[in-house]
Length: 376
Ligand SMILES: C[S@@+](CC[C@H](N)C(=O)[O-])C[C@H]1O[C@@H](n2cnc3c(N)ncnc32)[C@H](O)[C@@H]1O
Image 1 (cartoon, protein in one colour):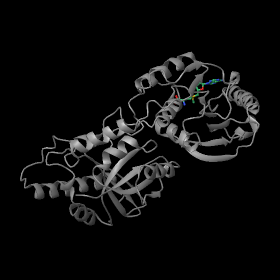
Image 2 (cartoon, rainbow, N blue to C red):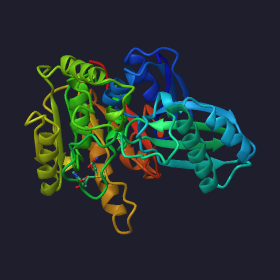
Image 3 (cartoon, helix red, strand yellow):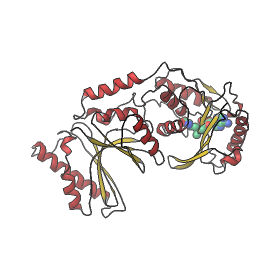
Image 4 (cartoon, helix red, strand yellow):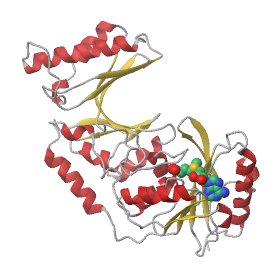
């Protein structure tokens, strides 16, 4: 088996960034669709993309897709797919499902049929008469039906890719690591200029920026479901981890700072950065956002401030936005990137954004306001 089709799934609005990440990793003909980027690869690429993708939720292997209007069709088409190429004889393979705008709408029935079809195929191909043991490696199969088209996939990631393995502590409203990485990648910051998050909370944005700045693979600190699969060799995994080690540029000087009004969050940020293997590379300090006074020119401020959604918080948050807008007027060479759900943000902040982009922070619809700094 030389070729596989992989699907990198993403939060709505981040699929284009994931597509670009894949092109930067050297993949061609990447097709970007709603909430996913699809590309052709080899089994050896499964370790690579799991290790390197920064903004994707997970990587799924497409076993096959077809139209199905009846349970019979679903059963036969599933059984015709080469499951034995991927799932080992003793593999454990629960089936999850979803269905939308389709004749086959009963998800539990679809899951049961897909399970039965795979079991029959495996028994035939492996020559097993009794029950399948299912005591080996883990393969989460998904049947996703949309407008009567069924996509059958196996999840290669395990825990979602936002779980980098460094978050030992968090605050009330932590940003997903995948979204934080996207916020950094949307800016023009390329690792050399000063970078600060004035509302750093548990440090997610500064930590993701440091990983990007030093070209550290975000998945180097965790495990993946496909690490135990037999069609990907141990050698291929070793090679991917070695490549990540070789490409990391730990000597690249970076100038990233994280500050927050809450001293507890500063302690949490420090612990998370330590766990991420960054040691004390990022200075984290307690500070009010309005006291920011950059010493250098041409820096980047990237933050996820509070949104003021809870009753009583709104006035305070608006004052913070107003003060920050006033402060940043004095530093026109700085580029400012702020993610918020506040509906009148620009009015309160006092400046019109150069560019805006709608992004989802979990289920909250937010806007990423981008104010480009003046070139000297
Ligand atoms: C939405 S959270 C940021 C979460 C962060 N991105 C993370 O991933 O953990 C907002 C943070 O802003 C901080 N904050 C609120 N008002 C502030 C102010 N005036 N100056 C500095 N920080 C402030 C809060 O303590 C909180 O940690």
